[in-house]
Image (cartoon, rainbow, N blue to C red; front, side, top):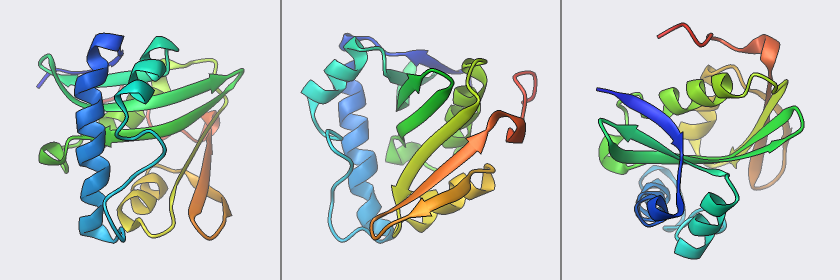
Length: 158
């Protein structure tokens, strides 16, 4: 297994769009009312735009795209817009790898932010285990934050 989180190109957008759609639609198996996801989750135009703007990343395993992330860096704050892994690769450590890489690849970042649906027990548990702290909650989303001093790993750890 040779994992890499790399900036995606516009030519990767088609693969990542399909993975995103399948990943988010699979949430219906864990509590979503119906298939669906965040804005643009199944839009090739959206993923192409994110690649063009430098926000789209791909997770590869021995060269095969198995997941992705959309990241927004603003000064010293990085918003993890979303991460997604192909359903056939769930529970293989890919999500953990993505988050570890995200937290290590931007040394200037002091705070990481993200949100996830209230109903999604899987993602809320995942982010909490990674040390993200709930900072706000509304009817639909839980908002999380983590500061650089709270990171649970360093770039040299496996």
